[in-house]
Image (cartoon, rainbow, N blue to C red; front, top):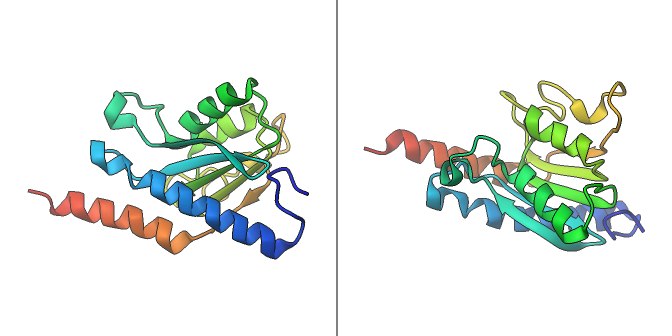
Length: 165
């Protein structure tokens, strides 16, 4: 059994990652309702969702209200600890440097993300804070889960914004 409750079979893990990404996509779809970029995140422990959030920067007027940080904070409250070494974060977009720092700070057990972010990605695209041996923790990363669906959600959002009167 792995940290996220999925048997060691890679096929089982891939199916579980896809199911969790579907939850993150559903969460992301809520963000445009208040003008936020559609990024969604879920935190799982032993296959159970302990937190699910979407971006709320516009809603809160808070530049740090990224889906990942909100989900990590909720998970910490739900689990009663800031150390999330048994948790998996599943997010629709590759975390930025701020969020990647949060993953390292919480000692996250595993990261799964959908679309790569060539402009701000800090988990493999521009930087790889999750695998920097100089930091106090390294986070295993699975990239590209449901990447086309995750990218389409973002592309559609920004196209609609550009075409709005």
